[in-house]
Image (cartoon, rainbow, N blue to C red):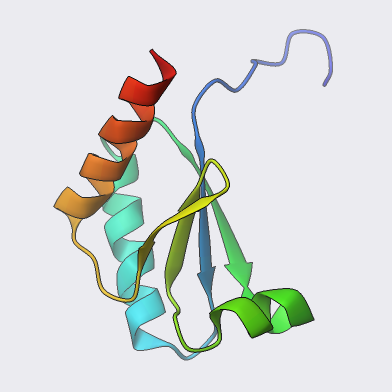
Amino acid sequence: MGEGEPVWDGPTVVLYGKPGCPLCDEAREVLDEAAETRHFRLEPRNILERDEWFAAFRYRVPVVEVEGIVRLELRFSLKDVHDVLSSIESEAS
C-alpha cells in the first residue's frame, strides 16, 4: 500500500456467481443497491475460474461470503444484505 492511500476498514463481500445466471445478476443488483448506503467492498468471483469454487458452489450460486463465512445464497433481499452487514458490524464492536 502506497503512502497517502486510504486504509480499507470495511468488510469485503465476496459474490460467487457465473455468467448467464439470472439469480447471480439479481444478487449483484441487490448488492449494488446496498452499496449505496453501506460501507463494504464488493469482490465478484466467477466460479468457472477456479475448480475449487466450482466444486463448492456449482449448485448454490449466487453465494455471498463475508468475513470468510457463507452468509447468503440463491435468492436474497436487500433487507437480508443489510441484516448480514449489521451483524458483522455488531460482531466487530
